[in-house]
Amino acid sequence: MAAQFGRRVVKGAATTAVAAVAVAALSASQAPGVTDTAQGRQNTGSQPSSDPDADNSATGNSPYYTDLPPLNSPTPTPTTGTGTPTGTGEAEAGIPATVLDAYKKAETALGESKPGCNLPWQLLAAIGKVESGQARGGRVDANGTTITPILGPVLNGNGFARITDTDGGAYDGDTTHDRAVGPMQFIPSTWEWSGRDGNGDGKKDPNNIYDAALAAGGYLCRFGWDLSDKADLRRAILSYNNSTHYLNTVLSWLEYYREGTHEVPDGTGTLPSGRSDDNNGSSSSPTPTPPVTTPPSSQTPGGGGSTSPSPKPPTTTPPPSTPPTTPAPPTPTDTVDHLEDAGTAKLTATAGDAFAEKIATRTETEAGKAVAKVRVRFTIVGGTDSVFTGGESVATVVTNSSGVATAPALKAGEKTGDFTVRATVVGRAVSGLDYKATVTARQADALARTGDTALTCVAGGEFADQVELKATYKGAAADGVAATATLVKAADDATANDKGPYFKDADGKTVRTLAGLTTDANGLLKLPKLYADDTAGTYLLRINTTGGATLTVELKVTAAPSSSPSPSAS
Image (cartoon, rainbow, N blue to C red; front, side, top):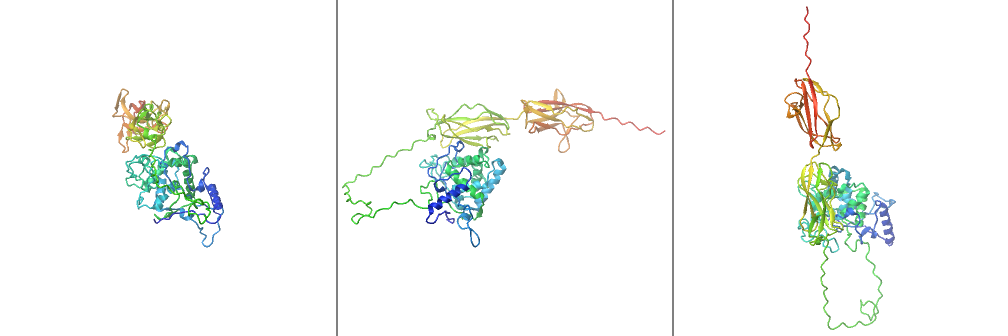
């Protein structure tokens, strides 16, 4: 492999003292609240966070690289010659060109779609470093797809989480269990809803760094998190991999990359060496071996220092017994037989409003017993722009002690009509449960003019004042309400008039019905300027809104003054 492992080695006789100073310096340089473990290298027994927002993991809590960035001395070390400091700092700050480009493009895209998230590309770089060593040092093709697949270990419960197959092997090639996939290490069940097309090729490929980086950014920006806030940043990172050691490692690289990075050619990035699933970690020295006393010459070498003669082995050695294989106990997910509604009320909301009710689903065994600690995924399907809180169309929730998973609140979009929210069990092939939700149009129940000036005009002229209205619903301003304005023939005849006042369209032509009007954020609606033909009289303008609000406004057109003939000269 072209790229070489980047290692941080402490040299000299006093390695213990030097390492202690180094770790202290790193801890001081990290973000507030960051702690270190085991020389900052190895995840030795790190415990999952109790943070409830971290229940859903992007990686299935798969292993990760534990190498930390180079330590910067608090006092700059004097240099000679060109003044370039020695060490691995410069190499570690290099990020492969295509990988770096993907991170920056993802930051730009999320800055437009979710500006309140404040996602820095350096956070994606930090996660990419910890998850895959920047796509194995940038071993990607011209389109950003990894030269060879990057797969995490089989998540079969043997030292890792147990996640049974959710993708039929489509992403990870495993039809029994899931594995984390690609440079950002998404498990298939998470990629299924969080995957993005970052390079515009029409595909969502977890092995493509552009797709994976954009998906990682979207994942970190859900739930309305603001990554400039330390608490939200912590929640987002822990939701990616639920380990405090992982959190500290990512934060260390984030701060390091914020100090400065540079671009290196693809395939030449440094590769990490220590992994959280490696019992030896990346310690700089092996475990010490206790001294052994040299045995006397009468001893057999390797006899452990005993001076007694070794007993003769028995003539017949019984064959070793093979312990019976104990099947792994079923996980809570394995025991789920079906889903039941947990008392969800009717789901109806006006466009733009939050649904008052939340969806609640219960996981049950065949016998009807509730099952706790099961991941339930809620997916919005159908042609709708409604979303969950945070702007996502998918949410994964862990069932509580009563076996109930309650989805985040739904927010209605502008598209009216019905859509479906489907609840499914992550990692278990049981029938999903569908919930119907309905979005009704924004409406008003009252209309009133904002002024009381009489609306008059001379025949052939134009009205000086424009008609302005305010729509309300249950006393509050009704924003975004559709309205229609028509110059009607009579109070009891809503047919459009063929004479009298009129509006003008974009081409200056006469129109007496305006459709597609909408109230503004304050419920206000200002109609275009009105004109009068040469027919004097009293006319009616009627405005109707969705929801049944109606207002009829009177318009008066007076005859033009007649011109008197000039007196003739005598």
